[in-house]
Length: 113
Image (tube, rainbow, N blue to C red):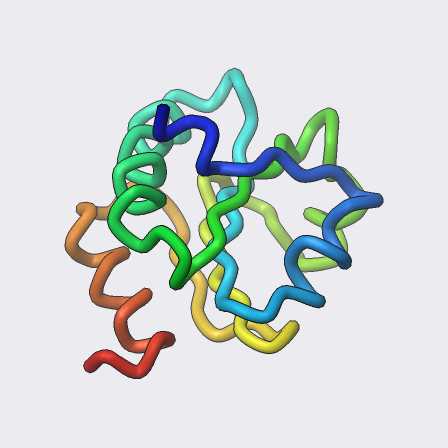
């Protein structure tokens, strides 16, 4: 059920889904071979449930679906999480971090903290 709340993106859908979004968007830049990405993925799914309708959650496979976008944002290590607000980068997180760290950063972007 939570998986449906994390939308898969590609280079052509990125602008519409992320940059033109009315609400903040967390994008998980990942690849299927990345073991650390597999650790982060269920955390993102949990957060997608908890922040439903306040934050949009998306994922982009940097190897297959979003190589141009990943290059454009200088993604050199994965997992990389970028939080966008009003089409601009509001925060980014590189590597595996605890769920509460990601939630705290989302709350800051939302103005909760």
